[in-house]
Length: 250
Image 1 (cartoon, rainbow, N blue to C red):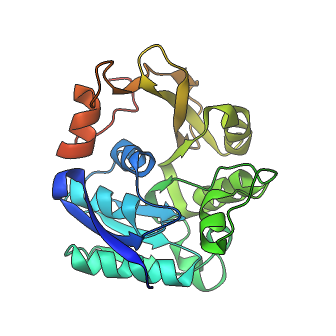
Image 2 (tube, one colour; image 1 turned 90 degrees about the vertical axis):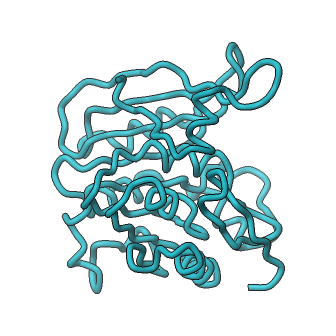
């Protein structure tokens, strides 16, 4: 793929080759990766992986974890594979160029029920809004109306009983997220992300457990920036020091 840049994230612990324009790695992906409760020996699937930011960030943070990076756009999937190799993670990361909706069926049916965690920064701009002229960027940013339902169904299919799913999304998509999780996931934990304390939420982190009947909880907000500028201590730890982002209220 032409017209790419090479960019360091996570305090230089991960370097990603990515398109110079269009959808690029940012805080959404970093926060989602930090929220995955992975431990050594776990299998993680990254839905709509793009150039591999979330999945590779999880591998950089947690030793002895393996990840499947699922990305429909073939050139972008090739960049994810290249990024895995460039960061010395090829043995722990597998890239699958395919449709999330079909994962765990047909030729990939053996994957069903084998994963501990699914994570995604899905396309979440409304389909009715302005569509980017570049098709790859549009796929990464614009969500078909049934995307949450389809991807949540795929996550349930891929996960072991008790496995977790983690999404980062728009706060105003909360009702749709809860509707998609209903009947498949419980123990839903919500954490709203704010640019600064006292401002409206800009993102929503959602984590749920397959088959759980635990009640929904709204956790304390995650604040990105200090009033005077720069990351808060918690955001700095996540973005620079690979700290986990607690989604269990502890």
